[in-house]
Amino acid sequence: MKVYAIPGLGYDCRIFSGLTLDVMPEFINWIPHLPDEKFKDYTRRLFHHLPQDDDGIVLIGHSFGGVVAQEIASMKRIRKIILISSIKSRAEIPTSFKILHRLRLYKLFTKQLCTRTVRFWGKHHGMKDTSTIELFKSMLSKHSNHDLQSALRMLCTWEPTPMKNGTSIFQLHGTKDATLPFRFIDNADEVIDGGSHMMVFNQAARISWVVNRELGKSE
Image (cartoon, rainbow, N blue to C red; front, top):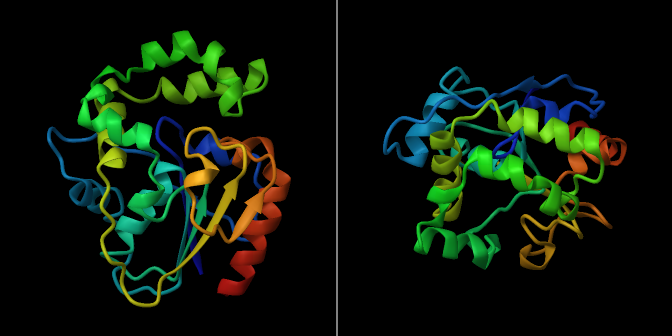
């Protein structure tokens, strides 16, 4: 079994740093978006090194990383996808994200704006202490504004592509997720009471236990 972990929009592999997993994953870091690149083309480039016919692959996707994982599963054989604070259908995309696209407000999404304002909204999204906020700022700084805006546009407009036969999805979501609110999630497989969008980092012990259980079922 091969396990790959994909961070969310604006994050990098450090979002998974608190996890203690029985199978060491390979961490996928984002690559630059090409001008006007389509979502499927981007994900194909991101995962070009995955074997085409290996049915022992498990993808762990946080937030937007979970959406990317599902796109990969439409092109390659994937045994299982574990979604952490992510979505599995267009119906689970918050209305606010759809409005962002309709008004093209995603073009205002910059790391400079996020960095300056995170002290006002960060706590609501699970960044409850200075060290977590500083980690978020550091992760965000690794991305260009073009890449952030391109990824946000892809998330806002995502239309799921049917996955190859045999791929199962396990969805893990927190009740206090303010980024992808729990009220939009349809029948999550595991619910973390009080879990925020950052629960993969600040509730890592609980998330590790659940993920290890699911990896054990995939062996």
